[in-house]
Figure 1 (cartoon, helix red, strand yellow):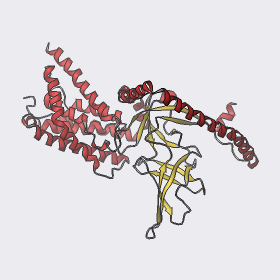
Figure 2 (cartoon, each protein chain N blue to C red):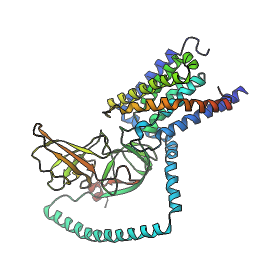
Figure 3 (cartoon, rainbow over the protein chains, first blue to last red):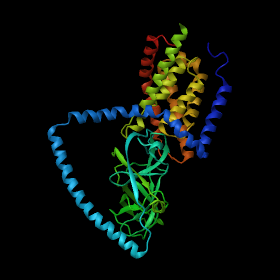
Figure 4 (tube, each protein chain N blue to C red):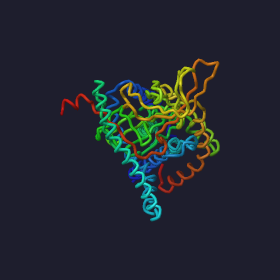
Length: 278
Length: 163
Protein backbone atom coordinates (compact mmCIF):
# COMPACT_ATOMS: atom_id res chain seq x y z
CA UNK A 1 0.00 0.00 0.00
CA UNK A 2 0.99 3.58 -0.51
CA UNK A 3 0.41 4.81 3.01
CA UNK A 4 2.33 2.54 5.30
CA UNK A 5 1.56 4.65 8.31
CA UNK A 6 -1.38 6.68 7.05
CA UNK A 7 -1.14 10.14 5.47
CA UNK A 8 1.53 12.55 6.61
CA UNK A 9 0.27 14.41 9.64
CA UNK A 10 3.27 16.70 9.58
CA UNK A 11 2.59 17.83 6.01
CA UNK A 12 -1.09 18.32 6.85
CA UNK A 13 -0.33 20.48 9.89
CA UNK A 14 2.16 22.49 7.88
CA UNK A 15 -0.26 23.14 5.00
CA UNK A 16 -3.06 24.12 7.38
CA UNK A 17 -0.76 26.60 9.11
CA UNK A 18 0.31 28.05 5.74
CA UNK A 19 -3.33 28.34 4.61
CA UNK A 20 -4.36 30.06 7.84
CA UNK A 21 -1.47 32.52 7.59
CA UNK A 22 -2.44 33.34 3.99
CA UNK A 23 -6.01 34.02 5.19
CA UNK A 24 -4.68 36.25 7.98
CA UNK A 25 -2.36 38.11 5.60
CA UNK A 26 -5.13 38.65 3.07
CA UNK A 27 -7.43 40.05 5.73
CA UNK A 28 -4.94 42.37 7.41
CA UNK A 29 -2.19 43.57 5.08
CA UNK A 30 -2.84 46.05 2.30
CA UNK A 31 0.54 45.36 0.72
CA UNK A 32 -0.42 41.71 0.37
CA UNK A 33 -3.65 42.67 -1.35
CA UNK A 34 -1.69 44.78 -3.86
CA UNK A 35 0.49 41.78 -4.64
CA UNK A 36 -2.62 39.67 -4.97
CA UNK A 37 -3.63 41.74 -8.01
CA UNK A 38 -0.78 40.08 -9.92
CA UNK A 39 -1.66 36.68 -8.54
CA UNK A 40 -5.17 37.22 -9.89
CA UNK A 41 -3.60 37.26 -13.35
CA UNK A 42 -3.29 33.46 -13.05
CA UNK A 43 -7.07 33.17 -12.90
CA UNK A 44 -7.75 35.61 -15.74
CA UNK A 45 -7.41 33.13 -18.67
CA UNK A 46 -9.78 30.72 -16.91
CA UNK A 47 -12.26 33.52 -16.31
CA UNK A 48 -12.21 34.37 -20.00
CA UNK A 49 -12.80 30.70 -20.73
CA UNK A 50 -15.86 30.65 -18.47
CA UNK A 51 -17.26 33.68 -20.28
CA UNK A 52 -16.56 32.24 -23.75
CA UNK A 53 -19.80 30.23 -24.24
CA UNK A 54 -21.91 33.25 -23.28
CA UNK A 55 -19.94 35.44 -25.69
CA UNK A 56 -20.26 32.86 -28.44
CA UNK A 57 -24.01 32.61 -27.93
CA UNK A 58 -24.15 36.38 -28.31
CA UNK A 59 -22.04 36.18 -31.46
CA UNK A 60 -24.29 33.53 -32.99
CA UNK A 61 -27.43 35.52 -32.27
CA UNK A 62 -25.74 38.54 -33.89
CA UNK A 63 -25.15 36.56 -37.06
CA UNK A 64 -28.55 34.92 -37.39
CA UNK A 65 -30.63 37.95 -36.44
CA UNK A 66 -33.19 38.73 -39.14
CA UNK A 67 -33.39 41.86 -41.28
CA UNK A 68 -36.82 42.74 -39.92
CA UNK A 69 -35.60 42.66 -36.33
CA UNK A 70 -32.64 44.83 -37.24
CA UNK A 71 -34.87 47.41 -38.92
CA UNK A 72 -37.25 47.43 -35.97
CA UNK A 73 -34.37 47.80 -33.55
CA UNK A 74 -32.87 50.56 -35.66
CA UNK A 75 -36.16 52.50 -35.61
CA UNK A 76 -36.45 52.09 -31.90
CA UNK A 77 -32.91 53.32 -31.32
CA UNK A 78 -33.48 56.30 -33.61
CA UNK A 79 -36.54 57.46 -31.67
CA UNK A 80 -34.64 56.95 -28.44
CA UNK A 81 -31.73 58.97 -29.79
CA UNK A 82 -34.05 61.86 -30.68
CA UNK A 83 -35.57 61.81 -27.21
CA UNK A 84 -32.14 61.73 -25.60
CA UNK A 85 -30.88 64.55 -27.82
CA UNK A 86 -33.77 66.69 -26.74
CA UNK A 87 -32.89 65.99 -23.11
CA UNK A 88 -29.24 66.85 -23.74
CA UNK A 89 -30.29 70.17 -25.25
CA UNK A 90 -32.12 71.00 -22.08
CA UNK A 91 -29.20 69.70 -20.09
CA UNK A 92 -26.76 72.22 -21.51
CA UNK A 93 -28.96 75.16 -20.57
CA UNK A 94 -29.65 73.68 -17.16
CA UNK A 95 -25.95 73.11 -16.56
CA UNK A 96 -25.02 76.68 -17.39
CA UNK A 97 -27.91 77.97 -15.30
CA UNK A 98 -26.78 75.77 -12.44
CA UNK A 99 -23.23 77.08 -12.72
CA UNK A 100 -24.43 80.68 -12.62
CA UNK A 101 -26.63 80.04 -9.61
CA UNK A 102 -23.80 78.28 -7.84
CA UNK A 103 -21.47 81.23 -8.39
CA UNK A 104 -24.23 83.49 -7.10
CA UNK A 105 -24.49 81.34 -4.01
CA UNK A 106 -20.70 81.24 -3.75
CA UNK A 107 -20.84 77.46 -3.63
CA UNK A 108 -18.08 75.14 -4.72
CA UNK A 109 -18.21 74.00 -8.34
CA UNK A 110 -19.59 70.57 -8.81
CA UNK A 111 -16.94 67.91 -9.21
CA UNK A 112 -16.70 66.73 -12.77
CA UNK A 113 -16.64 63.05 -13.49
CA UNK A 114 -15.10 61.03 -16.24
CA UNK A 115 -16.44 57.64 -17.15
CA UNK A 116 -14.91 54.53 -18.60
CA UNK A 117 -16.82 51.74 -20.28
CA UNK A 118 -16.42 48.18 -19.03
CA UNK A 119 -17.89 44.86 -20.00
CA UNK A 120 -19.04 42.14 -17.65
CA UNK A 121 -17.12 38.90 -18.04
CA UNK A 122 -18.15 36.87 -15.02
CA UNK A 123 -20.56 36.51 -12.14
CA UNK A 124 -19.72 35.21 -8.69
CA UNK A 125 -20.79 31.58 -8.32
CA UNK A 126 -21.36 31.94 -4.59
CA UNK A 127 -25.01 32.84 -3.96
CA UNK A 128 -24.12 34.83 -0.83
CA UNK A 129 -21.55 36.96 -2.61
CA UNK A 130 -23.00 39.42 -5.10
CA UNK A 131 -19.97 40.22 -7.19
CA UNK A 132 -19.30 40.54 -10.88
CA UNK A 133 -16.10 40.47 -12.86
CA UNK A 134 -15.36 43.16 -15.45
CA UNK A 135 -12.78 43.46 -18.21
CA UNK A 136 -11.02 46.59 -16.92
CA UNK A 137 -8.22 46.39 -14.41
CA UNK A 138 -5.27 48.13 -12.83
CA UNK A 139 -3.69 48.80 -16.23
CA UNK A 140 -6.78 50.74 -17.32
CA UNK A 141 -6.50 52.96 -14.27
CA UNK A 142 -9.17 51.27 -12.18
CA UNK A 143 -8.72 51.68 -8.43
CA UNK A 144 -10.27 49.94 -5.45
CA UNK A 145 -13.36 51.80 -4.29
CA UNK A 146 -14.26 53.13 -7.71
CA UNK A 147 -18.04 53.26 -8.28
CA UNK A 148 -19.67 51.44 -11.19
CA UNK A 149 -23.03 52.23 -12.75
CA UNK A 150 -25.25 51.23 -15.62
CA UNK A 151 -27.93 53.16 -17.47
CA UNK A 152 -30.32 52.76 -14.52
CA UNK A 153 -28.09 53.89 -11.69
CA UNK A 154 -25.45 52.78 -9.21
CA UNK A 155 -24.41 49.13 -9.52
CA UNK A 156 -21.65 48.86 -6.95
CA UNK A 157 -17.98 49.50 -6.37
CA UNK A 158 -14.67 47.88 -7.23
CA UNK A 159 -13.39 45.70 -4.39
CA UNK A 160 -10.65 43.62 -5.96
CA UNK A 161 -8.13 44.28 -8.71
CA UNK A 162 -6.14 42.32 -11.24
CA UNK A 163 -4.02 43.83 -14.03
CA UNK A 164 -6.70 43.40 -16.71
CA UNK A 165 -9.85 42.54 -14.74
CA UNK A 166 -11.50 43.69 -11.57
CA UNK A 167 -14.28 42.61 -9.28
CA UNK A 168 -17.29 44.79 -8.52
CA UNK A 169 -19.36 44.26 -5.38
CA UNK A 170 -23.00 44.99 -6.17
CA UNK A 171 -25.13 47.20 -3.93
CA UNK A 172 -27.25 44.19 -2.93
CA UNK A 173 -24.32 42.32 -1.36
CA UNK A 174 -24.85 41.96 2.37
CA UNK A 175 -21.56 43.79 3.03
CA UNK A 176 -22.55 46.82 0.97
CA UNK A 177 -24.01 50.11 2.13
CA UNK A 178 -24.54 53.21 0.05
CA UNK A 179 -25.06 56.70 1.51
CA UNK A 180 -28.32 57.87 -0.06
CA UNK A 181 -30.77 60.70 0.05
CA UNK A 182 -34.49 60.72 -0.62
CA UNK A 183 -34.86 62.84 -3.74
CA UNK A 184 -38.27 64.26 -2.74
CA UNK A 185 -37.49 65.29 0.84
CA UNK A 186 -33.71 65.30 1.04
CA UNK A 187 -33.77 62.86 3.97
CA UNK A 188 -30.34 61.24 4.30
CA UNK A 189 -29.80 57.59 5.21
CA UNK A 190 -27.95 54.44 4.20
CA UNK A 191 -29.17 51.83 1.71
CA UNK A 192 -27.93 48.46 2.90
CA UNK A 193 -27.53 45.32 0.81
CA UNK A 194 -29.97 42.64 1.89
CA UNK A 195 -28.33 39.61 0.25
CA UNK A 196 -31.29 39.28 -2.10
CA UNK A 197 -30.60 40.37 -5.68
CA UNK A 198 -33.67 42.58 -5.98
CA UNK A 199 -33.82 44.28 -2.63
CA UNK A 200 -32.11 46.91 -0.52
CA UNK A 201 -33.11 47.71 3.03
CA UNK A 202 -33.08 50.93 5.01
CA UNK A 203 -32.49 50.48 8.72
CA UNK A 204 -33.34 52.73 11.66
CA UNK A 205 -35.94 54.85 9.89
CA UNK A 206 -38.30 56.55 12.35
CA UNK A 207 -41.96 55.58 12.04
CA UNK A 208 -42.86 59.21 11.50
CA UNK A 209 -40.57 59.77 8.52
CA UNK A 210 -42.18 61.05 5.34
CA UNK A 211 -41.49 58.22 2.89
CA UNK A 212 -43.82 57.06 0.14
CA UNK A 213 -43.73 54.03 -2.09
CA UNK A 214 -42.11 54.94 -5.39
CA UNK A 215 -39.80 57.57 -3.91
CA UNK A 216 -36.40 57.67 -5.56
CA UNK A 217 -33.21 57.29 -3.56
CA UNK A 218 -30.15 59.01 -5.02
CA UNK A 219 -26.56 58.95 -3.82
CA UNK A 220 -25.92 61.69 -1.30
CA UNK A 221 -22.22 61.97 -2.03
CA UNK A 222 -21.39 61.63 1.65
CA UNK A 223 -18.64 59.19 2.44
CA UNK A 224 -16.74 60.25 -0.64
CA UNK A 225 -17.04 56.96 -2.52
CA UNK A 226 -20.12 57.42 -4.66
CA UNK A 227 -20.54 60.67 -6.58
CA UNK A 228 -23.62 62.71 -5.74
CA UNK A 229 -26.94 62.52 -7.50
CA UNK A 230 -27.02 59.12 -9.17
CA UNK A 231 -30.19 57.05 -8.69
CA UNK A 232 -29.76 53.99 -6.48
CA UNK A 233 -33.15 52.52 -5.69
CA UNK A 234 -36.88 53.04 -5.55
CA UNK A 235 -38.88 52.53 -2.35
CA UNK A 236 -41.10 49.46 -2.65
CA UNK A 237 -42.25 49.02 0.91
CA UNK A 238 -42.77 51.31 3.88
CA UNK A 239 -44.46 49.64 6.80
CA UNK A 240 -45.04 51.20 10.17
CA UNK A 241 -45.34 48.66 12.94
CA UNK A 242 -46.79 50.17 16.09
CA UNK A 243 -44.93 47.78 18.36
CA UNK A 244 -41.56 48.67 16.95
CA UNK A 245 -39.51 51.80 17.20
CA UNK A 246 -38.41 51.75 13.57
CA UNK A 247 -40.24 51.33 10.29
CA UNK A 248 -39.59 48.51 7.84
CA UNK A 249 -38.33 50.06 4.60
CA UNK A 250 -37.38 48.16 1.44
CA UNK A 251 -36.23 49.42 -1.93
CA UNK A 252 -35.56 47.99 -5.35
CA UNK A 253 -32.28 48.90 -7.11
CA UNK A 254 -32.85 50.98 -10.25
CA UNK A 255 -29.81 49.49 -12.00
CA UNK A 256 -30.49 46.17 -13.69
CA UNK A 257 -28.00 44.29 -11.56
CA UNK A 258 -28.59 40.87 -13.04
CA UNK A 259 -28.92 41.86 -16.69
CA UNK A 260 -26.55 44.69 -17.57
CA UNK A 261 -23.62 43.51 -19.61
CA UNK A 262 -22.05 46.93 -20.06
CA UNK A 263 -21.31 49.25 -17.19
CA UNK A 264 -19.60 52.55 -16.58
CA UNK A 265 -16.78 53.13 -14.16
CA UNK A 266 -16.84 56.64 -12.75
CA UNK A 267 -13.58 58.42 -12.22
CA UNK A 268 -13.92 61.36 -9.92
CA UNK A 269 -11.75 64.17 -11.10
CA UNK A 270 -10.59 66.22 -8.20
CA UNK A 271 -11.89 69.73 -8.84
CA UNK A 272 -9.01 71.53 -7.18
CA UNK A 273 -6.26 69.59 -8.89
CA UNK A 274 -7.95 70.18 -12.21
CA UNK A 275 -7.98 73.91 -11.66
CA UNK A 276 -4.30 73.93 -10.73
CA UNK A 277 -3.29 72.06 -13.85
CA UNK A 278 -5.28 74.31 -16.13
CA UNK B 1 8.44 5.14 -20.37
CA UNK B 2 6.90 5.29 -16.94
CA UNK B 3 8.12 8.89 -16.70
CA UNK B 4 6.30 9.73 -19.88
CA UNK B 5 3.13 8.08 -18.62
CA UNK B 6 3.20 10.02 -15.37
CA UNK B 7 3.97 13.23 -17.30
CA UNK B 8 0.86 12.66 -19.43
CA UNK B 9 -1.02 11.81 -16.27
CA UNK B 10 -0.02 15.13 -14.79
CA UNK B 11 -1.49 17.09 -17.68
CA UNK B 12 -4.67 15.04 -17.88
CA UNK B 13 -5.24 15.43 -14.14
CA UNK B 14 -4.63 19.15 -14.32
CA UNK B 15 -7.00 19.41 -17.29
CA UNK B 16 -9.79 17.67 -15.36
CA UNK B 17 -9.28 20.07 -12.47
CA UNK B 18 -9.33 23.10 -14.76
CA UNK B 19 -12.53 21.81 -16.34
CA UNK B 20 -14.03 21.33 -12.87
CA UNK B 21 -13.06 24.86 -11.82
CA UNK B 22 -14.55 26.24 -15.04
CA UNK B 23 -17.80 24.36 -14.41
CA UNK B 24 -17.86 25.57 -10.82
CA UNK B 25 -17.74 29.20 -12.01
CA UNK B 26 -20.06 28.84 -14.97
CA UNK B 27 -22.88 31.41 -14.74
CA UNK B 28 -26.18 29.83 -13.70
CA UNK B 29 -29.57 31.25 -12.91
CA UNK B 30 -29.62 32.43 -9.31
CA UNK B 31 -32.23 29.87 -8.26
CA UNK B 32 -30.23 27.02 -9.84
CA UNK B 33 -27.04 28.23 -8.21
CA UNK B 34 -27.99 26.58 -4.94
CA UNK B 35 -27.97 23.15 -6.60
CA UNK B 36 -24.60 23.45 -8.31
CA UNK B 37 -22.56 20.35 -7.43
CA UNK B 38 -19.09 20.89 -6.05
CA UNK B 39 -17.28 19.81 -9.23
CA UNK B 40 -13.80 20.51 -7.90
CA UNK B 41 -14.34 18.33 -4.86
CA UNK B 42 -15.79 15.54 -7.00
CA UNK B 43 -12.72 15.50 -9.22
CA UNK B 44 -10.37 15.82 -6.25
CA UNK B 45 -12.12 12.93 -4.51
CA UNK B 46 -11.70 10.75 -7.59
CA UNK B 47 -7.99 11.41 -8.03
CA UNK B 48 -7.32 11.01 -4.33
CA UNK B 49 -8.79 7.52 -4.54
CA UNK B 50 -7.44 6.64 -7.99
CA UNK B 51 -3.95 8.11 -7.95
CA UNK B 52 -3.00 8.76 -4.32
CA UNK B 53 0.71 8.88 -5.08
CA UNK B 54 0.24 11.75 -7.54
CA UNK B 55 -2.60 13.77 -6.07
CA UNK B 56 -2.21 14.49 -2.40
CA UNK B 57 -2.36 17.23 0.21
CA UNK B 58 -0.08 19.65 -1.64
CA UNK B 59 -2.06 19.23 -4.84
CA UNK B 60 -5.32 19.90 -2.99
CA UNK B 61 -3.75 22.97 -1.39
CA UNK B 62 -2.80 24.55 -4.72
CA UNK B 63 -6.10 23.69 -6.38
CA UNK B 64 -7.76 25.41 -3.40
CA UNK B 65 -5.64 28.52 -3.93
CA UNK B 66 -6.55 28.64 -7.62
CA UNK B 67 -10.21 28.25 -6.71
CA UNK B 68 -9.92 31.18 -4.28
CA UNK B 69 -8.47 33.37 -7.01
CA UNK B 70 -11.26 32.35 -9.37
CA UNK B 71 -14.16 33.03 -7.04
CA UNK B 72 -12.60 36.05 -5.38
CA UNK B 73 -13.02 34.80 -1.84
CA UNK B 74 -10.44 35.44 0.85
CA UNK B 75 -7.19 33.88 -0.35
CA UNK B 76 -6.41 30.67 1.53
CA UNK B 77 -9.98 29.69 2.41
CA UNK B 78 -10.31 27.12 -0.36
CA UNK B 79 -6.78 25.89 0.24
CA UNK B 80 -7.64 25.35 3.91
CA UNK B 81 -10.85 23.43 3.34
CA UNK B 82 -9.60 21.34 0.41
CA UNK B 83 -6.47 20.34 2.34
CA UNK B 84 -8.66 19.21 5.22
CA UNK B 85 -10.97 17.25 2.89
CA UNK B 86 -7.96 15.63 1.21
CA UNK B 87 -6.56 14.65 4.60
CA UNK B 88 -9.81 12.99 5.65
CA UNK B 89 -10.04 11.18 2.31
CA UNK B 90 -6.48 9.91 2.75
CA UNK B 91 -7.30 8.70 6.25
CA UNK B 92 -10.24 6.72 4.84
CA UNK B 93 -8.37 5.78 1.69
CA UNK B 94 -7.94 2.04 2.16
CA UNK B 95 -11.60 1.70 3.06
CA UNK B 96 -12.88 4.03 0.31
CA UNK B 97 -11.09 2.00 -2.36
CA UNK B 98 -13.17 -1.09 -1.63
CA UNK B 99 -16.43 0.71 -0.83
CA UNK B 100 -19.30 0.22 -3.28
CA UNK B 101 -20.20 3.34 -5.19
CA UNK B 102 -23.25 4.08 -3.06
CA UNK B 103 -21.18 4.11 0.09
CA UNK B 104 -18.61 6.35 -1.57
CA UNK B 105 -21.47 8.69 -2.45
CA UNK B 106 -22.45 8.83 1.20
CA UNK B 107 -18.93 9.69 2.32
CA UNK B 108 -18.84 12.36 -0.38
CA UNK B 109 -22.13 13.77 0.90
CA UNK B 110 -20.55 14.31 4.30
CA UNK B 111 -17.32 15.68 2.85
CA UNK B 112 -19.04 18.24 0.59
CA UNK B 113 -21.29 19.22 3.49
CA UNK B 114 -18.25 19.73 5.68
CA UNK B 115 -16.52 21.72 2.94
CA UNK B 116 -19.54 24.01 2.54
CA UNK B 117 -19.82 24.50 6.30
CA UNK B 118 -16.15 25.47 6.59
CA UNK B 119 -16.39 27.81 3.61
CA UNK B 120 -19.49 29.64 4.82
CA UNK B 121 -18.34 29.71 8.40
CA UNK B 122 -15.10 31.38 7.32
CA UNK B 123 -17.01 33.72 4.98
CA UNK B 124 -19.11 34.65 8.01
CA UNK B 125 -15.94 35.75 9.77
CA UNK B 126 -15.27 38.08 6.86
CA UNK B 127 -18.78 39.56 7.04
CA UNK B 128 -20.78 37.58 4.49
CA UNK B 129 -23.48 36.08 6.61
CA UNK B 130 -25.40 33.06 5.36
CA UNK B 131 -28.98 33.22 6.58
CA UNK B 132 -30.30 29.98 5.10
CA UNK B 133 -29.12 26.39 5.19
CA UNK B 134 -29.68 26.10 1.42
CA UNK B 135 -25.93 26.21 0.95
CA UNK B 136 -25.83 22.54 2.04
CA UNK B 137 -27.74 21.49 -1.10
CA UNK B 138 -24.54 20.99 -3.17
CA UNK B 139 -23.70 18.09 -0.83
CA UNK B 140 -26.79 16.25 -2.04
CA UNK B 141 -26.35 17.03 -5.74
CA UNK B 142 -22.64 16.14 -5.60
CA UNK B 143 -23.43 12.77 -3.99
CA UNK B 144 -26.03 12.08 -6.67
CA UNK B 145 -23.60 13.02 -9.41
CA UNK B 146 -20.73 10.95 -7.99
CA UNK B 147 -21.47 7.63 -9.83
CA UNK B 148 -21.44 9.43 -13.21
CA UNK B 149 -18.28 11.37 -12.41
CA UNK B 150 -16.60 8.24 -11.11
CA UNK B 151 -17.45 6.16 -14.16
CA UNK B 152 -16.47 8.90 -16.64
CA UNK B 153 -13.15 9.62 -14.97
CA UNK B 154 -12.43 5.91 -14.50
CA UNK B 155 -12.96 5.32 -18.19
CA UNK B 156 -10.65 8.24 -18.98
CA UNK B 157 -8.00 7.03 -16.55
CA UNK B 158 -8.17 3.46 -17.81
CA UNK B 159 -8.07 4.38 -21.48
CA UNK B 160 -4.97 6.49 -20.89
CA UNK B 161 -3.52 3.90 -18.55
CA UNK B 162 -3.03 6.40 -15.76
CA UNK B 163 -2.60 5.73 -12.15
